[in-house]
Length: 313
Ligand code: NDP
Image (cartoon, rainbow, N blue to C red; front, side, top):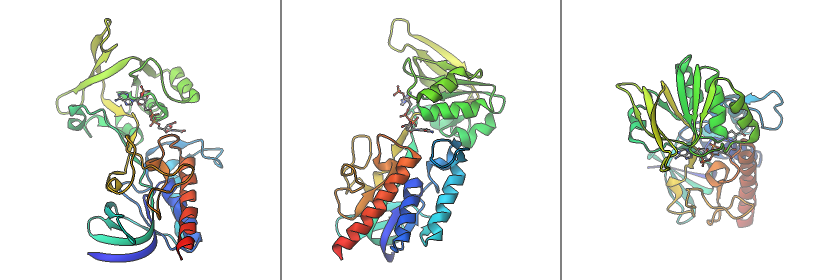
């Protein structure tokens, strides 16, 4: 297998990875960044970002990630297509296999692989994937213009996506398992006031139906209670926005991972239990998961890489 020796490897291309690349390239560490499965990360499939400081008019996730990439490349970061498929962190130099065909031997590694959308686990979700079921409203909403759709989840993502869908579809149902939304107040207010959005509280999805394409969802209200009520909701599109799972599986043999899959770091730092291996952004953040906090931890990881390399020289 082809092997390449480098000082700093960055895995993942969201705000954490690109920020780490900007800082490490400006520190002359010649970082190599592999973009991973979703170049640009989750933000490339969101709509407008309104809360990243410095953009009073908002910015699309796609444009922001293109700008971050340009900035990293401008300072000399080597940004490449490729996915980390295996690793060996048992001894130095640390080894990471890319696309099962190339090995990188790195003195330091910044893991910024982000997180991936969760599904409910219903067998029919995969049967109707691309035929009515989607975990990305901004990618697939366009196909549901003037149609009826449902979205599961009551967090900020679900509200953001419900509002986006309401700009295209005739009717949007939000399916919420509790009696309240989890989203920030401003997002709650926006969905509650929207004339095309109807919120179905205390409602769970039992299954989906349809011939070749999705035609609706089997739902249950007040599941397990005396007033339990099963009903069918005819919809053309069924969207999931129920959170994300950190992309940490490749590293779990060597690093400490919490019960939800997040890489554990030392409090207030991006240091993992292995010296020289750092984790930044959503893959190590069960709490905040914002673009700005991911970028912040990417910066911290880069500074920690520099200090670590100075300390061992
Ligand atoms: P969250 O974890 O905040 O919300 C997940 C939602 O999905 C909750 O309503 C949860 O319900 C529901 N859910 C989870 N599992 C199931 C299930 N099996 N069946 C039905 N419903 C389920 O995820 P988000 O992706 O919305 O947000 C993640 C983080 O990113 C948050 O910190 C959020 O603030 C942030 N974010 C910020 C944005 C912004 O500032 N512009 C935009 C998008 C996200 P329950 O409440 O019952 O657990």
